[in-house]
Length: 217
Image (cartoon, rainbow, N blue to C red; front, top):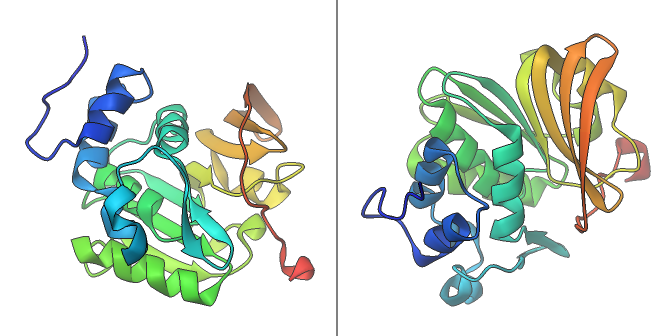
């Protein structure tokens, strides 16, 4: 059954994503409804924040198309109270969605390689007091190396494309944990069944900015 009227904050965009089958999980639907995309786009794009298109966030980068974010969140299947790593957090939209989902007993660690974007994302997410409450924290760094200090993670979301999955991210994922990551032109879903045992599904036809490692900067 479709959930078209879950709460008063639900936007036309969210209803469209539900109708088209991209949003299904009630908790993720609520997170999308509360974490309005307009809070994470540049002022000149606020009027089209509800459009299902990527939008510039500066530095030649974009906030991803809502349809793509919805698909990745549904594949990731984040849960309340989990410990999650968000690689390539950009303007903070995915971090805010994940922070809403995990709640006050969960943790979201955001990694961004550009200092201006890291600060922008932190400020955007803290509009909802997730940083002040200790639910979300932001770190400037090489996303391909993850953030071992807060590992292991129940879930890892990566929003930048790579040619192969970084070993550090595999190592920092809990056994039983899930990762969603763009690899070449596909979105990969992985579940870690053992130390070197990963179940994988591939979803083709996507485009992301590259995951740039420290030695490439």
